[in-house]
Image 1 (cartoon, each protein chain N blue to C red):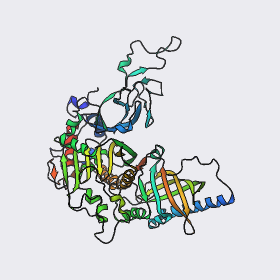
Image 2: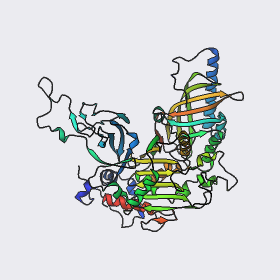
Image 3: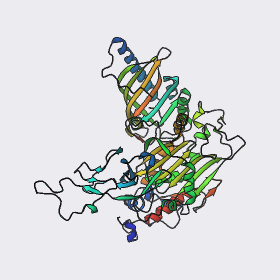
Length: 419
Length: 171
């Protein structure tokens, strides 16, 4: 395993220092600086972090694979003959070509089409074309040791059907990484075997961190996304708050209905406050209680780029992939449970109108990061200000009007980046 | 969704069939004209009362995955999309220019017709930048309405799984 750059200490190569100790002020430079972007790939995405790879249900059988990313590194995730899940850097040890260039499939071994180097599903190099040359001429040198030329392996952990990978030996076990309280929040949602309902992705015209911050920013939710308010969708007795991992790196923001005597109602009351706008067809707002509680929204982040989402009956994992200093791609995998009947699937599909690139309560996240990116590029010496809920990183019960979790993101960023 | 039977290699070119195809092409021009002229409130009227509208990626469709980016069943859900766009959703103002071509009349389907047409949509932001926003195929079922055709079902199958920034104006 490569030694991450920060083990050599300092960041003189980076030429960047965090201004002061406070994580409630963030210099715009971090969204625009190419050297910082490159360092993030090594120190964060290939550093001591767990990154979403896929869900287990996508690779149920031996030989199944799909391609994925960790940061900007392409990754293959597969299930081998023993049932084990392997994650491998999708880069031939020979010339660096992509080994798997199709998004998914089922194979017995991994063959790079460029020069026919062959790997088994664990990444071990098992064959090299013309290794003895032709007619006694050419071929590999005698000192070539195939065991030194496998595909680079990632460590893999599966939690509640979700597959995570890390390039680093230093990353603590997944549950220790996110902490027991937040692990229990995944348990709460992923209560049964999962089924993939579909995919899409969204190109975001901004640095990846602006989206990571956005997911942790519970302060903006009701202000930017005004769908509920506009349509007077009354959500009586809403409770909720913010949970943070002990490290501050990861968060959960949730909203719940306080139990009323409405015999575990399955539908939010929809009416117009302004007698002006109302939904002609509110069926997609129905919430079938399936998780044993009254939580309507649960948005959970795993640093750096993973989101696990329950919005009513819309379950999803989101994977954030940086595509350059001012561009990122957000991969949505929309989920149901394996035992959903046709009616439940139909309901989830309707509920999905709320989220994704065309989502009633999420589409704005596609453009707002770009608007910040504009500012950052025009004035990298300036900074953002995040004073809501103090300057510390603390959980919040009852209120989501806080930027605490965003400050937690910057704590994680600084610790990984050693700045 | 639609039938999975293979479409005929050559479509029916009898005068009656060509007339139907010409009507579908005219319908698509009206549809594009309404959206591209920002007369979005008229858009639900291109559908039957319980017409279905999906924007789905080719990847999902070919893999048999049911997820759509937009899924509306009936004029109520269609008009909610437009009301939300006008009153709730926030985005940089932009317009579409639809190019619809290669209409193929697949055949009769009960009391209506099945047809497919290619589309490409250019998106222009008011600040100027212009891109090919989406391209793909309309997979449609049309029925006779009140003197004109109506969509009983329109599946907008996007060739790409990527959506740039956001999708708010219907395709």
